[in-house]
Amino acid sequence: MIIIRNPVRDAVERVGGPTKASNLLNVSNGTIHAWIKARRVADIDLAKRLAQFAKMDVQEIRPAP
Image: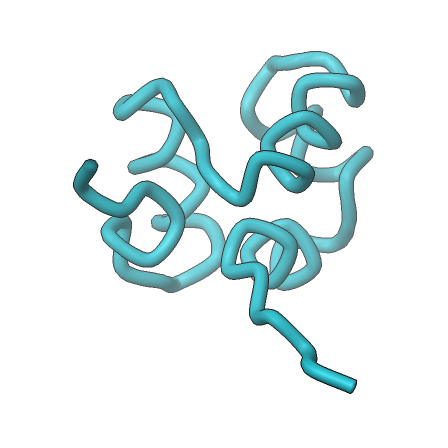
């Protein structure tokens, strides 16, 4: 079995889970789950804030195309 790392899920878990992340970033819980599914945060400002809260590098959760 191959396990693919999901840095967005890691960041969300570091801040306390999807509900906590959605409250911190003022977005819906559905948005957080969409980011996890896509493995990417499209909005750079939200990506920076999530990275800051999770103590991660923003490039981990929003890789360059």
